[in-house]
Length: 460
Image 1 (tube, rainbow, N blue to C red):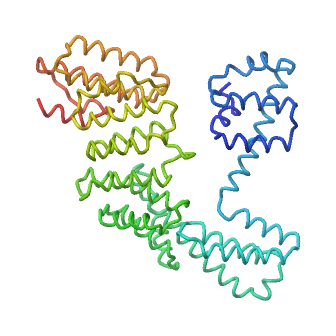
Image 2: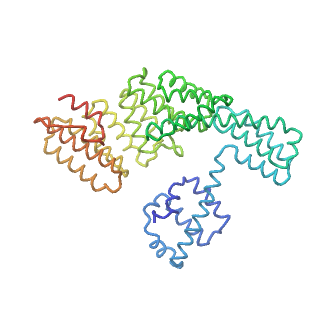
Image 3: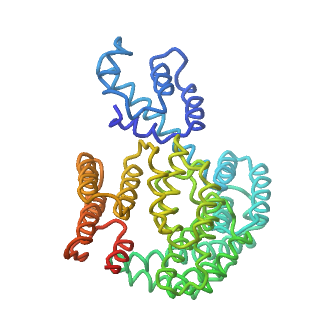
């Protein structure tokens, strides 16, 4: 049943969203109806929707009085209501939209005094907003557009000033959105080799003609950072973020932090970042500020990816402290196993190979990706263990490859190749201890822990 559209959408809802949709549903159906009973059936199983049997099995066992067509129609009906609720909920998430649409509705109904009073309050609220973001000038431009392009008589008494404001905020909006898109156009052109030079040139020409805004100055700095990868500019812009220059709940704040994460790692790999601690500080801020969180939680895979990154850069003590501070925010029911796996990752990057098995001996994971991560770390620990016999190690590696192959259909081709090749290379490395064995890493386009393996090869 988890292949149906309805279930695939419901799986993404938070507990708060289930509650909100339940209230919305009661506006269209009543308690005791088939529609509501089916929703309650799903609501009670919301933590395990992906394990439900087929729709037909559910119908026969729990809703047998409905025909197959009637059951299918009921699911479609609930999906339609769910999509309506999602659209409304999404609309409410967009800053200022409810107020703007209310002003538009007041004008359409001829309630001009109410429209003007609401418009004045909204303009004042937007202008007094703390922290910069992309939506303020856009909302102001839309506000004056709504007022001017209505039957509201205010445009006859204040039309000149209002059109001046409309033009000012519209031009700033265009400038800000143009500069927002420019670095992405440049990145896509570079990464995908897709020619966007015409659009890039037009934005560059346009930005010279449009007025500067408080936000556009910082967007220009972000573009400069994206082009030249200057460590000093990264530090300066990150300082502005921490100072609260940008609205912490806003889009630009999130965008900036994601850029900082990517660019700090690039600069560190290039060796041009003077302070490697900055990489850890940026990741620390990204979690504490909520940028990397989804419903106030960080996903299990993202957390362990971050730990791997930071363990390779920062000290053992710093990274252990990082894990301890944020482990309770990880979206998993098995936090202790996640903590121990994180410790094992840190040990690997700090050459404490003999401690890896100690941390991983009692861990259990439902997530296959995390389970495979632990097996890779165990493979490294076993390989570095001088006491283990070659045959025992090779058998362990063979079992890891078999487990991976059994789950091949559940993972991407790149993921499969990266891990399978890793176990293959570890096996060859272990043989190299006893006889000269050729290992050409160029043959492996996808390979997990490539940097570690290169370091290990250099020791022979």
